[in-house]
Image 1 (cartoon, each protein chain N blue to C red):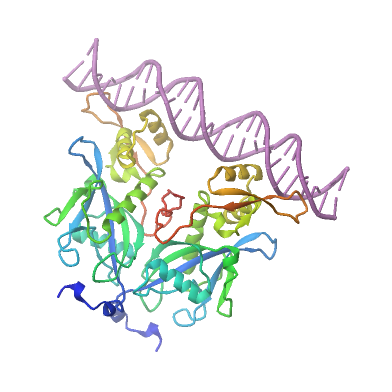
Image 2 (image 1 turned 180 degrees about the horizontal axis):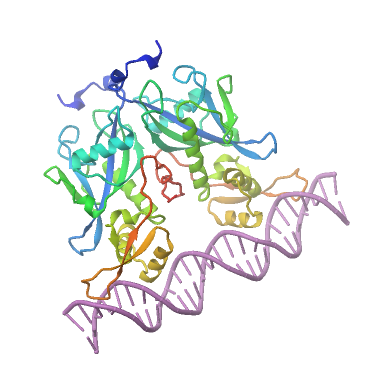
Length: 240
Length: 240
DNA sequence: GCAAAAGTGTTCGGGTTACACCCATGA
DNA sequence: TCATGGGTGTAACCCGAACACTTTTGC
């Protein structure tokens, strides 16, 4: 008996079930241009509903863990990932986001650095996809990814967030490439570097990146805070 | 038998219960200065836990309603209020926010105009409180109100939001008073009015407010959008 | 030397801030 | 006429956009 065959009025009396999911963004070089682009890991559904379709990693909330802990644990179990940057995104609870059950999802979003992304346990059922070329996903997960992208872009126009997609050392041009990939627009290198140097928590190291066929750029380091479990502040509030 | 006497390991196996609550802000004149200040309606707990303490209006999520509908319905049932401005705030799910049960709350926040605020069914168990002088509330509701205040301030520094606290017609000085009350700082009247006039959706009417003992100020009208149920965008993203 | 990107200097213009000053009403 | 806020004008300042120019490497 498939879940959709359940009596509707009967089902509508059951309490809504609660799940925690996460949108994870990481950088990978585009196959075409080689420039960094946004990717995200998805897992294949191995049960109904949406059996066989790709979906955000997630799962139920265990009674003894916080929401953020549940997100972390589900992520680790399904993909092997343990992002340092993890924040709540939004709670989705529309009536028709799932078939056969009423489902409320509290969704988190995460950024992974290259060393973290390498920990992905890729398989037939776990794969990275380009964020801007997604097929049809399970549930309303296409909408959720779109919203997470909007949030990422919005937040990147402000704060100290791009570094959570880069490694420990980086050139200012690499940071600019991240901005250009995420915001999808060209930025003036000269002005961009001045702005970055003016922001706090960006420290110059005395190292340089060699091996390029031009003047070796200086390497920088991010020395700022990473949001912990209690960081609600970074959710913010700007008019559309 | 009180709820806290339940066996802990037994309780920890039950699924977390889900509730929807709302922080509602409205303006009332301060008793002392007469200037507008932020107030919010609270309801008294009439059952355990936290029996007798004041709490945010809220209740369970019915299986056949969306999250926002649940917020609206709970609000109407407990306080009589039906705010036009209603948005999701955050999902709170810490392990120890309630005693005797694991509770996850999806919290909304609302702004009411004076005509809406008048609909409050005040009683022994429903009352308005000054937002900046709250006593100890049930659950973690003090923290939630603080966060909602942070969001309100943050959002007000940006967008078209103050009008949702005022009536249909208002003077620019009234808008400035709202900003000053919420942000708790003085603003230059001359510059403030120029900024407002430059923002969209603010239309001058040909009416003037009379009865003051100085030059009659012009009345304005807000002609912009109000967030509907699907408005996720207004959640935004600015670094702390 | 040449190409290419790193890195610096300078100008321009729009927007915010500070503050002087005039206007229209009630009493 | 005076007090009080409404409303206008203006100069200083700040900051980002645009872009010319110098520097340092690989080839």
